Image 1 (cartoon, rainbow, N blue to C red):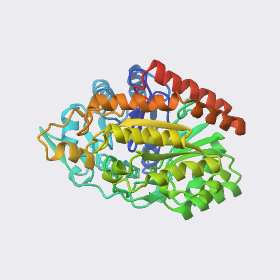
Image 2 (image 1 turned 45 degrees about the vertical axis):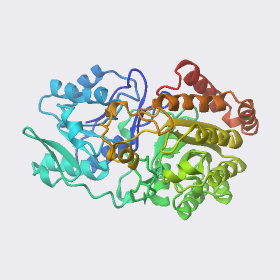
Image 3 (image 1 turned 90 degrees about the vertical axis):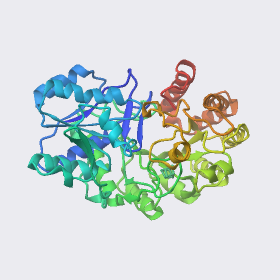
Image 4 (image 1 turned 180 degrees about the horizontal axis):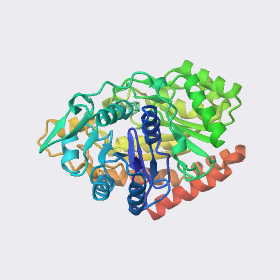
Length: 475
Ligand code: SF4
């Protein structure tokens, strides 16, 4: 049984790949659970999915589903900030079906397996590495009663000991995976990103990993493994045929890593007449005007760039391998290609001062992306930033539960965590109170009337996030 735990204090939670956060205005399909479902079915297991986050169900529903389905194994994902909440899944499982085995998946805490298991007494197995490889091996070993020591990528209890097995080999061939088991969901109705418009909607991964070395990133230095354009089209056609899908977010870290693949994918979307509006994330130096125009023609309506900073010094110190100029061009070209831009920034990377923050705010005011998010730097375990903050200094790492991008836990040499929270507020204000920004987005809607519904809902979201929620659990 696959379980997506309930919302956290009523706030939806994203539990996907590197994105393990609360996000007030997005309800995403539990794509990785759907992928696990397809993999387990291909091993002839009977699978049920309970998406409590998506359908806003409470814990009682878990008990009822457990009693109805009586699973041998319960798999779920958890995040650092919602840890205690998510881990409650395991105590409910044990109290309801004492013999059921609990398996938790979380990417962000992969370097802290002992901490995870010692703080989750009813969690039997922690899947530290790529679930596509580890979960089928683990479930197979449990089913066959084989020794667990050969299952790579897990940590588990052995009496009073916690054992951490050898690292798993990363997934080699993304094309070899079956299409995620979307049919485990009763409907796609609840799902949207940012604003509930353009439904039916889904997220989708067309590649995995990112070889760049950004110091703050939890997937930095992992191999990029693509799905082929053909495999991606197969999945999109399946979604079109079975769900009349209208909007897709390609959640890959770096969608345009291989230009040829994107071109093939775009051409196939056009020739198959898919008529899907889609969004993607990528690095600003991996686009150009021609490619963006081709993407637009194939249905791309928005692109998210990790710009991180308007200061070259900060980008260089973070090993971002990007110039401010490249960020500027990427936003400009997307505008020319009539693709909306979402730019994300991090405040508080090493070297940050009020001057560099001012450079970032000026960058925003000059480039005017359609939307932006400002996060404070978070030293996630396993990143180089974590090593820089806690490595050689005699400072105890903070509780992983407090690692979220809306509230700084560390400062820089020049700025305190409180300064960074203030800088985040200043950055949002510089955008949301800028008449030019509103004017420009109004101009966009006049030229793209199909975006009117989305834009209206987006405005309500942005204002509520800022005025009502003070940008907590929000971007
Ligand atoms: S480019 Fe993006 S995904 Fe890749 S390492 Fe940097 S921040 Fe992470």
